[in-house]
Image (tube, rainbow over the protein chains, first blue to last red):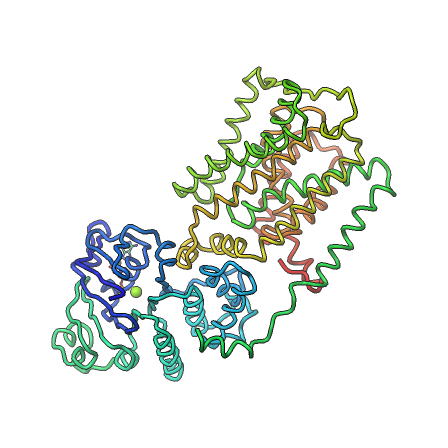
Length: 239
Length: 333
Ligand SMILES: Nc1ncnc2c1ncn2[C@@H]1O[C@H](COP(=O)(O)OP(=O)(O)O)[C@@H](O)[C@H]1O
Ligand SMILES: [Mg+2]
């Protein structure tokens, strides 16, 4: 298991954003995480990536308890994340944004530059390499988030709604990209509202509702789960 | 990674980082080297002023521009350099060059201690500016209160009895070249930083610490490194300047005026750019010369500096360099 959470909880003052969350992910799987807005998905990512510490519970990465480590230490250990609201480094070009990520594991400038170009290519952003990162469209910004995270050469990638706002054909392309990342041996945690992508892409799906896991299983099983339909999918299904 | 490597060949290679820029910089350097041979003492003094502010502001630019931490206490490191060499020479007879190296080490150590506290407890923006200013002011008051360091009168640097370059007592022409050397070192170092890992990691921190951490950067460590480098560079410039003036005292070296003035060339020219401080120092030096001609009242300069700082921060936050570099092919950040 590359990632294991045991009874993880997080409170913000009186608000319980997550409670009693336990699950584990085997290497090179795509685990979907779905749930209504405010269910705690982004908070879960923030706990795994180390932006916040859990209020209680343990988070293990490759068997090691990483709950007390800083966000940067976790990135160096191999956990990369995208931000739900894209956060390009505004004064850097698209290429330089990815280059900054590539420097995580590579000291040499030309070698890091090579990896950055390869990663841009991989994410279909090469044409925009020298553009200011603030000039990108929303779908491009989402891909830049992925590219910068990928350039750190992670083993676990946390994707937070990278398909939100994409057109159907762009969703298809993003799904291809996710599969190719997984095929390189990277484990993916995939927060998404686009059900078509979740159902097609994920090996397993965890459903959060008000900070608790209400279902955990194969996409087909989740789809038929009464509790999930009530809490999230709705009676008409397939949002 | 094999899939990635396969597609790499198709990627167009970026043009080599500014061959034209390099040629222009070399040309500028030749002009700067020849300059003193053709000008009057007045222009030589102006040249020294420009190079002094360029190198001093360039040292601030590492922490203030590249790392984006707006220090208002940079005068402290400058003064530590000046006081170290002046004090070690006048009291113990240490060669100035030794005092300069000691000063640089003391400034670096000071930055390490102060920076560790400031960055650990995550003082950002205004808090960082005020914290560093307070540190500098405490040192200024201390220097003025301790007779051991000359008190409010400061330390006059005794004239050397023998000719010895280690004592660094030179003619103005030689000071011009010393400040030119300092300028070249700091511009080259800045350009190197900007193009390499350290520079990109500082740029990430400057733009967003959350993003920086997400790509494996420890903001505390990187800011500390930038702060120590900035301090270690400012101190030798303090030594040089004190040798040029032949004295040190609290207001000249620790004063609020210096603390603000050092920030200006970088802000006017372009924060976090290698040539910004040079451009800013030229503009600022001539602006001051002109305003002296129209005889401003003393104290007005502090007001004028503050106003300039605000105008540039609001209207032209990237300074003049981006405007200029658009006209120069091949010049980058
Ligand atoms: N930094 C924070 N401070 C306070 N409350 C927060 C913070 N982050 C998230 N929350 C709260 O935690 C709950 C879960 O939010 P979030 O994880 O962003 O949900 P999701 O990503 O599933 O939409 C929400 O009620 C949100 O307001
Ligand atoms: Mg969210």
